[in-house]
Image (tube, rainbow, N blue to C red; front, side, top):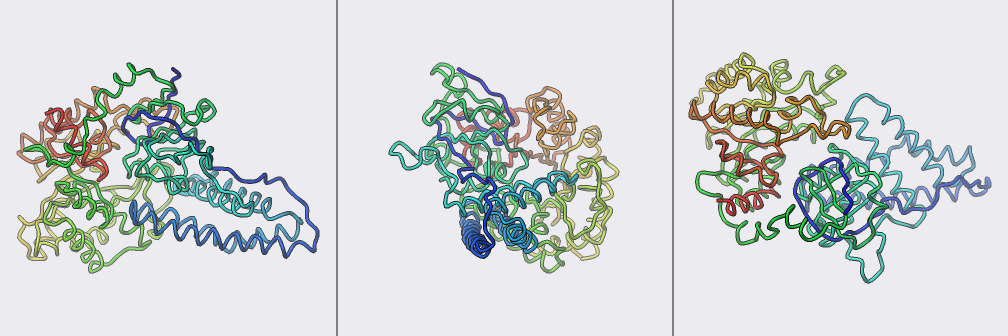
Length: 536
């Protein structure tokens, strides 16, 4: 049995057979010189390929919006914009004309140059955009060459096209996620691709165990090989024996359909994280106990502008309607780190994860904060509204935000009991003052992803140090227990909304220390409930 250790992209454990997928099955792009009489023909080939790819990406956008969600579909919309960029296309045509080369080599050369420029940028979001440029380049070259990325054994009778298989690929690409029947894929293993990639986001949204950063794994397996993927630890085992499989995945039937369709155990709430009205509708369909985290900043990221009070309030009202009476916790705009709003013209930071983000941003932009709070408070005509402050640093900062919200509620003549305010605990400093923060909160929520990252000073997307990102570390569990005790002492609820809450084995442990509200991806709600029922 061979073991590979990589980067955990999406949690969960699975065993199954391999399907090999190649994302780069296109013709050689070696420069081919052409005669001047062939220039028009090559440019026409380019234009035809662009039209074909644009239509394909438009269809992908619609399909992913329906199957996965609106946020994920924006990946392909963004790639379509890159594909149709007038500057890039004009440069490619000029290269064909002046260098007398075929369209494939011109596309490879020019897109490659743009990709390198983006990779060299200091801004993380712009560096991530290089992945989109690379995917557009591969797509366009494949179209020109009349080939497509796909499964290695495609066309053979044994090819299952990823159904009930673990897909092994060189790189986890958004394009790959669309070409497969994601509802039937058991797991994903790749040699390249980070935690923050678009395709990794899709894998987590779909609840597919995934591991990346495994150099050499693609050549170490073949179609049909036996593989065990541990998405929680980032480990992959080739040809494991039955005994090892049983030890690693004790009871594969623990989360049976019968168990997963039951309600949450008494006294426990399994909620869903959401970024859109579509997400809330999906959560209602699977009867999640509510929305433990609604990411309001996604509304602005999609709109690419600040929205007014009326626009925001109408949108939030639709969210509450879609929740069908279940509680929704609205996190105020969490900007900074890996979530930037270009239209705000915020000064560029050397380290945005330690910069002007979360609560700091809100306090530094009182007009934006007041507009959002007023939009939410207007919903009190029908519901009790829960407002959560992101990335709280300490008690004085939390106190300022509480006072601002309470002041706005008073000005609007709303009963204060109709607004519940809470803090998101994501920093060690907030934990150190948890008793003071809890004293002025109606609820607490633990953002385990950032809390773990900041507690251990580790960038979990960095393969060199990802091993130190350890949700099982006793120091972290001591902090979690301390937060739960502080909430219990003030008789207020505490939830956890990071990926940790959905990791196998973690739900019951969290409940045992007093965290009775778990908020996870909608795709994981049923599995978490099933685990709790089995361990009850």
